[in-house]
Length: 453
Picture 1 (tube, rainbow, N blue to C red):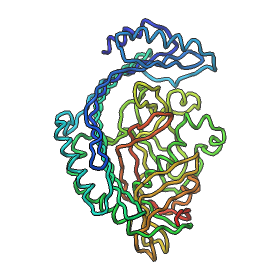
Picture 2: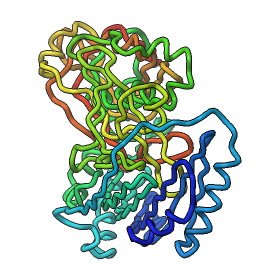
Picture 3: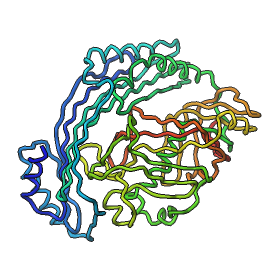
Picture 4: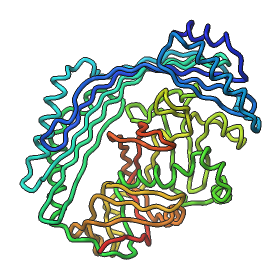
């Protein structure tokens, strides 16, 4: 493949040229209630070409590799038609590497029938509760081989195996409808999704228990969020603000997101780290052939860095980070997160609870939205805290506020970091779902607005 791509690349001229080609095999199983909505395998091949003239980018995607030379000429002609401000790329030494993947149990070695039987078993458990009305289950394993080559002499070949499982139970009692979910995934092989019957049972129990929970009473509280929810803060509320292609287009945010500015307590560290083996956002090279690296977005409470492509790195005069990613060959790479998390602190969960006279403990994530620095998140469940002890369960609540004020209000950071990779992923610029992982420890945060009854 390398010699063929290289030969085609040399036949056309552009200021900069790159080819990404992918071979993808997907196995998917989807249940809705008792119905098996979909099951099967698919195989796809295709590529994307980016050509840069001084004034802009041209992008062409294709499926017929035999016509690559024609597509390259089309891309270069398109680039020459663009008359804009000169685009520069951060300099990068040429690299040549072939990366194969090894997992303890390759999903390709498991028959489709066996995968079906596993999912069917889990789905029956999801439907087993007396007040469960329906369920949803999605399984997928995806084997991808990516080939990247550019006009600067870099060639990277990377293999990847993703395995994901998502389960949801929906309970109903009259007009009261509640749900609970469980998601797991990553690049660790088929073993990630085996032996999850207990988790399915716990999902059913949580959904049914929420029927008996009291609706939350709105107000301003000291809250403790679990690792899943703290990961949502790291990714959704703050991480997207650190993506440089978004940031350099927003002059107002540039004045706020000044490197060195204090955003939280000295123990607060928010990190994007692609090279965590097994996690959903794991990769060694991004889709521009740039080596991935660990990047501190916030270090000891201060804004320390942001995520870059080669273009944004050159535009902002900052170190390149290897965060240009595309969901598939159909799209050009844009700046994206990988494994984004809040690092562990020094407090135990028990210590954090004991320090709260009146507050709320929040667990899980049902959904939400962000608008620049403003956020609204819906936890899956909550518990009242009174005099340092957990009391009864509450439901139907949400959190809202300004992420900068919220980070500044963090009072304690737990010592129990957990990372999560689910069946979904990150969405941006029409590219979704991109595999990522999020996480953090428990956090204690003062004066947070909680919406409820």
